[in-house]
Amino acid sequence: MNSEQIRKLRTRAHPLKPVVIVGQAGVTEPVLKEIDLALEHHELIKVRVNGEDRDSRKALCAAIVEATGAILVQHIGHVVSLYRKRPVG
Image (cartoon, rainbow, N blue to C red; front, side, top):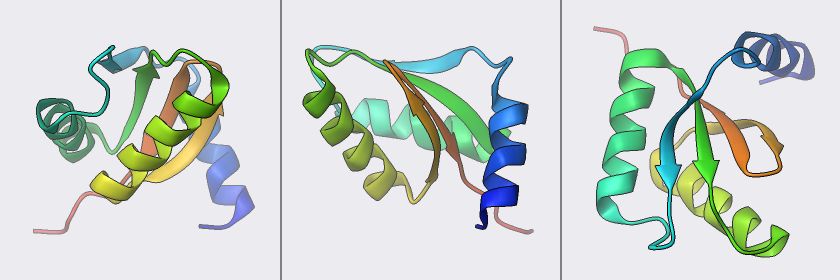
C-alpha cells in the first residue's frame, strides 16, 4: 500500500473503538482467532495491546501482523489499527 492509501485508512480508523483486547496472556491462539474473525468481517479494526512497556507492545503488534497477514495502519500507545482486505468470493 502506498502512503496515500494508508492515510485514508487512518482517517477511517480514527472513530473506531478497539474490538479485541490483548491481555496479560499476550498473543494467544484464541486472541488471534478473534482478530482474524474481526478482520474478515470489518477489514479495518482497532486492537488494544496491553503490554508493560513500549518494546513489548511493539513485539506483540509485530506478532499479530505476522500471524494475521494484516497491514499495520497505525500504532499509537496501546492501540493499533489493522487492515486486511476481504477475500473476494
